Length: 417
Image 1 (cartoon, rainbow, N blue to C red):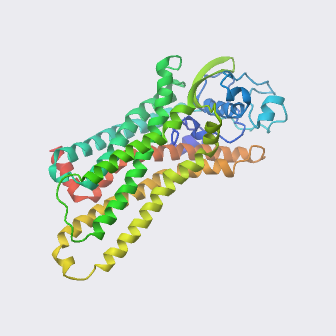
Image 2: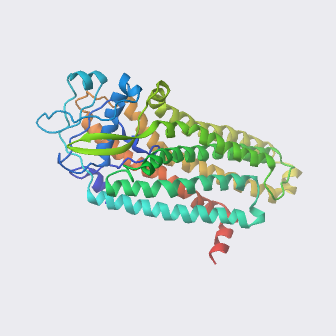
Image 3: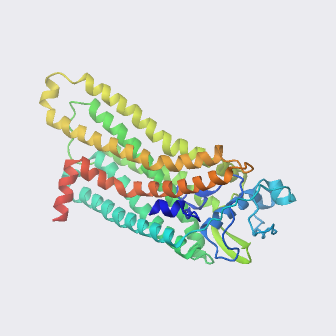
């Protein structure tokens, strides 16, 4: 049903309200959008994505750099009403724009319902799963150790992300506008929303790196049997992870702003990444590569390196009396290592499509290519799929632990009795 919706005659599209799931996740680099079905229809978030590109073009002009440009006026008609995009010179001097796409694009009602149902399921599973996971670690003294403290940190980051992200995304899709757009609270949400999203991803990434390092340390020190309790070093690690994640998310809060447009005879206000300084312009242009490098490649590289070292260490100690005397303890360490490996693997599977979609837009999509319309529709479908996959990662970790870890599974069962 979902794919029928995606590939149907009108090709329903994603609401694109994420950044790794925010409003700019569907922005096309210097491109023209497909025509909308009806020029007088309500402003959809797909149109908002098109407007994001217009803002990006004007953003590099001197006026926007000084923060004086507030409105983007409606372009002229050319047989049908459409959004003007392309280079800055095209926008300001009226030079030739790319040929318009033939196929209309709209958000079907069926898509709204499907995406709303999926968001509600993700919200319920994520809140219950991560909340239960935190409760288990907090209430069971035997579960209070270094690795589980990092897992609890991971779950708390996911919990915050789901609690903020899903309700706002559902509202944006159904109401076709930013919540409280004309109030100070709307501006607060506009800055808080992408900030928490990026901070949550940073918490996930850095916790996975810390877990990989911790598993290598545990296997490398065979004779050291840890007791209960969270080591001071792990506590400092967690605090550092959260502070660094929040710091790296600051450009999102600085760059996103409420922008007012006169579009198709309708004045709309939406939340967009609007660079007003040279640094923020650089951040916008380098953002996709930065996200792919730090928030995707770094945790995978870190996990690969330390799991490779851990495998070598385990093979080196495969024989000998030490292995026999600590066999039960080693089984527990291997189980935790297996859990962490599964968390990293699922992270890679969930986030790769979104990073692939972003980089394809930057490298493959050409705004003046005659065949770009088919590629555009494919990328928008890929965006819908990848945004949902990335969000699923925030609710799936407790499920992984339930099936992979016997200890967590037993605790889950006890709590549900």
